[in-house]
Length: 128
Image (cartoon, rainbow, N blue to C red; front, side, top):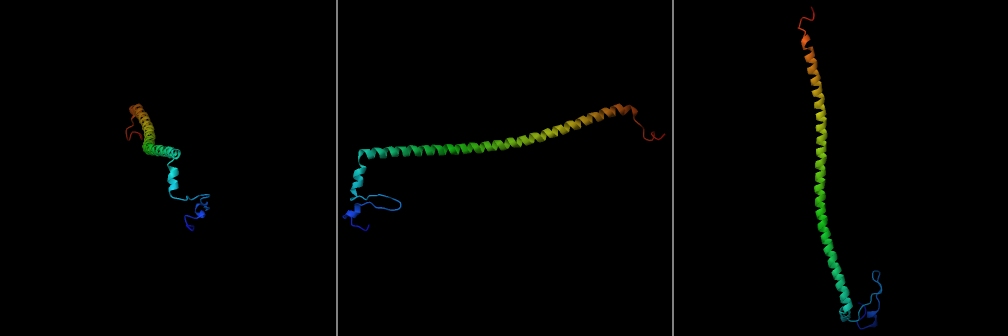
């Protein structure tokens, strides 16, 4: 510091770009004397309690966030499984439709063969 501690300039306000009107104490003991007043102690205690509550709340929210992220991941897995099952169901439905169409054609063909079975033409008899 450019001034000796005993000079009047030692307690004059210091002006800087980041701090304005900061006064320096004339003796190091003056800060602790002010800090020991009951009002300041009460305010410090309230601030400390508020900080502790805030820390507890943040920790609680962090745990909840982790839990919710886990549930979200699980739900995303279920969503993917449901989408895969839906695709499989659609494929099976198409397969069933195709099988039903083929079964119907086979049934019609069997019926046609049964009705024509009485009029079976011998090979070679068609040209006579």
